[in-house]
Length: 263
Image (cartoon, rainbow, N blue to C red; front, top):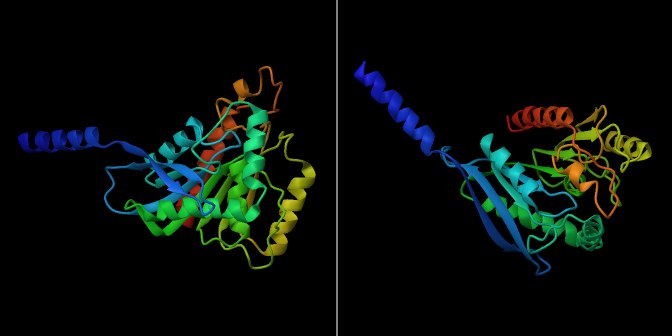
């Protein structure tokens, strides 16, 4: 009986000591811009584990993107929320967000290089298995990870949550190596029905392994609990909104997807 109690107390002590570790990591993009990544992992897990890049919404590398990195760490992954704007900058005003996004994407090669720099940083972490990598993105970040898949970046999978579907560089037959999961709000006014149809036709033509999920009643930004607050104010928009059911459903889809692609 005493032995069982001792084992129980030891296990309880181990669980209480385990926690999600986080740290900010400065790094540099090929264009010389100083970036700041946010790494999260569970220190109770020993050795390398699959790594997941998180790409932020058009708001920038804010607390929401960092929270998603911690959520992934709690699932057993090494997660890095990367910086696509530089200096970790972020905003809550759509005018500023639009300016940040346009500056980051005006040169597609530079934008691709910034994503790649973040991916390489994740691969370098001792908690990451560099042979098992995926990427998820939200809004602007959803478009970023889909473009990475279009370019044939060697990822096991990518997940887009209420992401941009249009692109200037469509996939070509055989170019997409990663499996793709798209979680889209059926009431998303920022992504048109034409965008959806064009995306599906593009993926079909490219022979991509993809799944497109349309979530009933969900607007753009449906995963972010701050979306309702950010949709109001003196700026008068944008048309976004949180949807708890869609948030939970899409996250469950992602969990199953990552488990499948990582084997």
